[in-house]
Image: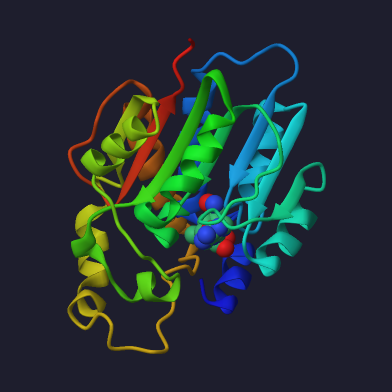
Length: 254
Ligand SMILES: C[S@@+](CC[C@H](N)C(=O)[O-])C[C@H]1O[C@@H](n2cnc3c(N)ncnc32)[C@H](O)[C@@H]1O
């Protein structure tokens, strides 16, 4: 990710409809799972500037909360937002993970930046740290054809389909429990908004992300659209298309 994008992400991630919508879905999916009464251990792999770590702290109140990122700029901001968490520098492609048995590993929009092949060994090592019955939650950008200037700004290496994600988690020895596209109702608007840069993609060295907070009524409307979609995904609907993929996978209990 370009350095300036960490500053933008840190500034908007509390309020921007996209982040609020994702955390609402994560909250719904996490509430559905059973967690140990004590000793809960949680990792955010590629924690960015820390809003998800703070969210995990509030939502699950884990005994151990860890996060890593390969960007010192992200880590510095994350430490301010989630002072309870142990946050360290680590590259998912050449991992030197701290020891740990985790009940939950969350990784949002990180494999998008590494690509699957570069992170395959790292993800194997990481998910080997999941306790039996533990959970991996991934959110990823969908569809190569949706690639735009935004992807250039945040260094997207790969966009995904549900099928690629299912095959990947199964190759890690996990069982997919929830798998759906997201942003289904908003997909036409995303395509329209991105169309000019999708057609010109790769041509702008000064590409910027889409991450600016729209006017308050629009931000609220978009959040509500995602809350409605999240309600369906929570109830087991697999949406047929969208600009992101959500996956909840479980390490078999034995
Ligand atoms: C799009 S941001 C998402 C941040 C956070 N997960 C969230 O959902 O808000 C992607 C993050 O992945 C981190 N990242 C990218 N490649 C990485 C790698 N190889 N190892 C560790 N972190 C990486 C980036 O530094 C960035 O903070």
